Image (cartoon, rainbow, N blue to C red; front, side, top):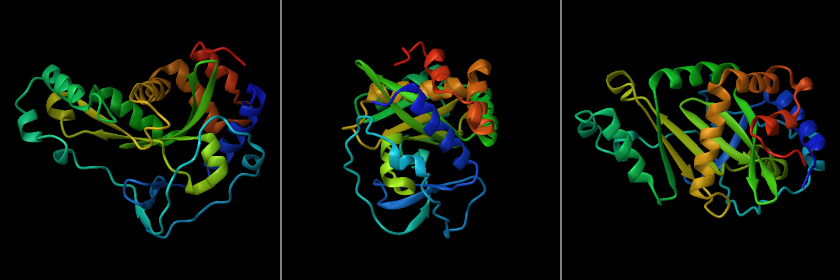
Length: 250
């Protein structure tokens, strides 16, 4: 387990690299590398150099069982109409849709959430300026640090330890998709989280991660930490994130 000072240093290194680099994550669901970078549509992606600090980074608790494949494809969401009957949802009240969506995902290795359209638009706006952040996931007597990448309508979570070990080929542990098909008519955005590695994240942990990540983008005070991470990395301190979440500073 790394101390807060070490985590702050590695986070600053990530933040400074992130402004220049294209992060590639291997998605075992599609068995092809998936790319997330603002404005990138070409299949010819640049694979950045792994930050040197990662080679000094110790284990923070995850075992790696990822499988990798060749080839590059843009990250693609599962279409909403392949999950639910969208036309039937259009005839329901927003509260009913929320209940149906949440109940459908319980106990399935997935997470189902919803948010108001205005909150999604705020998340979308802020993610364009600040795409990366780090979230500590508390487990018993310590925490595992997760790296978050947001490019709406996609949000990705992976472990810092796995990123250190595999660099740009690190697999996401958890992927989140935002569906805006009902935003205008129902003032509702559907959120689906897919736990890629159920051995690394439980459904409840995944739900907590997406809700917590969203809170850092939607809460003005917390968003200042996201801005600092992305724009003023030299001033970023991981302990400030722990304080915001009322977690002990180890």
